[in-house]
Length: 141
Image (cartoon, rainbow, N blue to C red; front, side, top):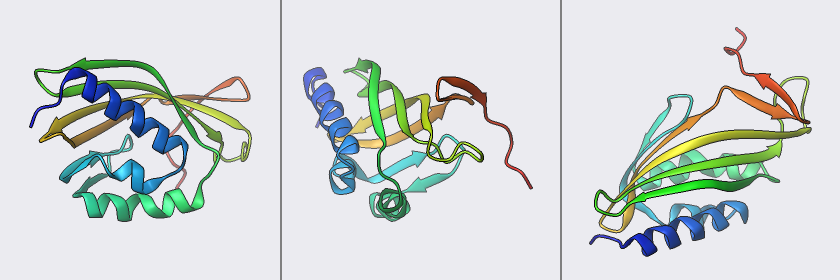
């Protein structure tokens, strides 16, 4: 089953609402059972249940986050989306804990059978905390 462009846009719009409602069940719902998720730091998760299990602790531990769509490119024929977003939340960065943080990134999303089968996330390595640009470095050892 292929989705129309309007159906893809609606799925993405509804999905962002579920993220901003901090509704993990709603966020997971549009994923295919065999989804592949690749995090911006490189971790991979395969399968809808494994993705739920990976994200559930994060949802439980974090509140106050919000995604905003910057741009959405839809290729109906290929069933692909380029979703450019801003993510805002209380920072967890050392020395900046709790201060307003913004991250920007892109998800490359592919649909199969009307569901998200692949979600590849890319994020800038510079973020904003209280309006100051901060470059992320390698983790301390």
